[in-house]
Amino acid sequence: MKSARIIVLTVALAAGGVSALLAGRSGKSGPPEKTAHNVSSSEILVAKKDLSTGTKILPQDLQWQAWPATVKSKNFIHKDKRPGAITKLSGLTVRTPFVAGEPIQEAKLVNAKGAGYMAAILPSGMRAVATKISAETGAGGFILPNDHVDVILTVKQRGKRGQSETILSNIRVLAIDQAVEEKHGQKVVVGKTATLELPPRGVETLELAQERGSISLALRSITDARKNSPEKEETGRRINIIRSGANEGA
Image (cartoon, rainbow, N blue to C red; front, side, top):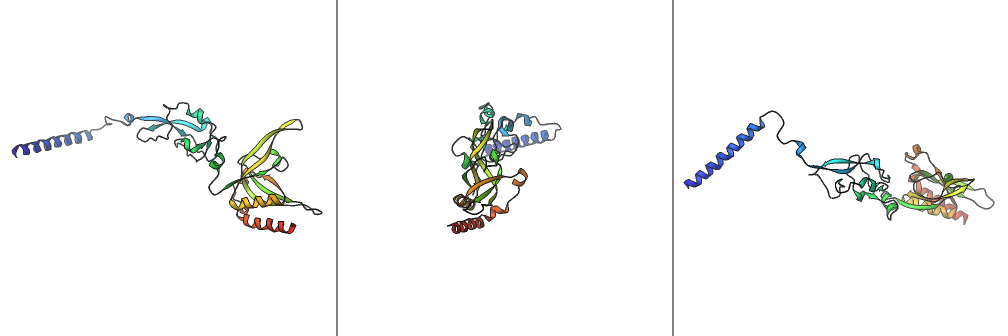
């Protein structure tokens, strides 16, 4: 018992001495012996600016940034393991948005020429539908991916004057199938097929319209494209108009 008390007392004295030593050090002025510079870090690839869905990655969009080794993920791209990552990832398309300074993850990128690209950039609840166009029905070849257009239906009947009506408004163009053709001695880009981003009811509107007549696309300005169009919410009414028109023509 006596020896046990001696051991306990010795441990208590030792603990008290350590506490006093630490208290004395904490009261000293000046920086601590260990600084933040001793915290290990590594460089990882991050977004240099905000990158939205559908953005094509350019070298200047990415940069290497020091990152604490304690906060790491196997999905991050480390410079010491992949020094040429910026060049390799250039040309890929953003599938999920990045904010400036966010670590780049390849799972959020997609190859624009690979399978699944269209499904990757299509917003939830929307559909991708293709429609044939020409230089005359596609704004002379000036429509490009990410432009916004109005979809116009033109119906011609024998002995009657043709009628045109805007059936869908402010619609985003997802892709244009383009071919270079000669026209008046100059090379111009003419789209053959336009792929449009539509809600389910808009798909029905377009399909019914293509059965009734010819489809044309009218290019909208960038300023107008940012505005919400009430006609997107009226696709149900448009379907009824087109369907009733088809019944009358029959």
